[in-house]
Length: 589
Image 1 (cartoon, rainbow, N blue to C red):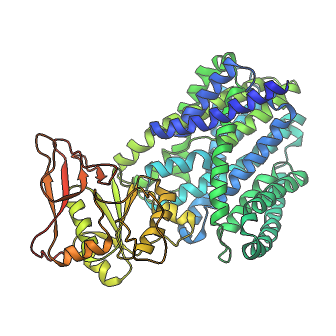
Image 2: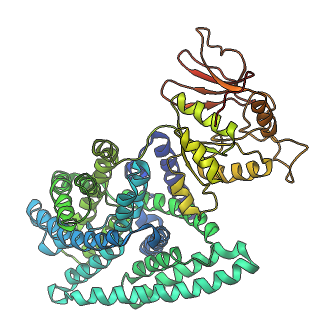
């Protein structure tokens, strides 16, 4: 028994993380890989099935995991990023969307599935109102729509989860006890209890973090996790599933305070949440049998078609009527409503309990919801990119190089890359340097490294590589280290540090040093003062670059490769080599 549990836990962990790594490699939403992997694993072995692996601990584990996920999502909801008009739209989209979706899904389910029972159909409608940050946020990060649409859909995706969970609890108890137990006011009480517990949790956590930031910063992460779990448990003990409201309110409150630095906690939470999402999706998918799916597949696919083509567009049209959103923005919002982990978790819990109580049709709840989750994620996940491009509201795709530094030679590098077909953005400290960069046709702004980690993550979302080109070796060292945390190693480059200068010793054997020979920032500045310039040489038929010192290679598709000691130029026919050549002054601005 112990060996089987150990095998099951190890297998679930490997599948959860491995599926996410594979999805990243394939450039797919992680859930598109997680669900079929978990489903197949549940067919091949009993060890990963929740009832066998965790038994009675499964539902408490799901509640705690979802609570942590909603807290982390709440940390992304900053009021500063949302205008008053968007806040009103969020409220309308959540409230109207819940009503229209619940009624539409319940009615469609009742028509498509004979003998299901009205109560079960209503419960499925309540479960499928939720969308959730686990699927919405990765899709928004992939599509990168304009800020207004992104804010609207982020807030909707996060807030609809606890609202939908509470609605599901209300309907569940009504079905379990009979229609006479339906009390809409009970939902408002649960919201109030959850909000109150979340507010108390915020006060407790703020006091704890204020002390720990001064005396024990390494204890911030466990303190945050402790308070989040405690708020969830206390709220759930007071009212069923009020814990989801409590953790969401706690996260939003922490996101909008300005006295505490949550960088370390946010980074840990993000990593933990990714693991929890993977584990939950694998477990939920493993709990569904092929025979259950086959029994509901035609009707479930028809339900998804109605949800995608009718219900979501109708809910969006009603909620955004007479709003300031453009037709294209409304169309994109209508084309984005994937279902996520809360729908799967509640379906798993409610379906099992109703089946044990002998409610007719309850054994179909999880398979129908499972198909709806997978199908909506596939439809919206694969369609979001093409739809956003067709509507013209998606962010930039392809290579975008961030040039950190505003000196004349840093601007020369940015111009040379842009002329070679590479997307370029410049961060520069002084207004004069920014204006000089803009005069050359470059996008320029102040550096954003000191923003909070979530804001910095959003700021760097479109950036694929960074070149840190200031004259200060110490700044270059620290900035490169920070940027690697966001962009990854092998995507951040800087000039060779001068071993005789600077207050900080550079890291040994540092990767990402520009040029195939030692070329410090100071040396670059001196060469440009003496009239050096950047030249573009097309690769010859033999694949060798022209004369001068090669720095960058740009492919015909605009992809940049940086020449480093470990990676020589090696251009291919059609590539452009940007090299540093001696010559007369050229007045780069």
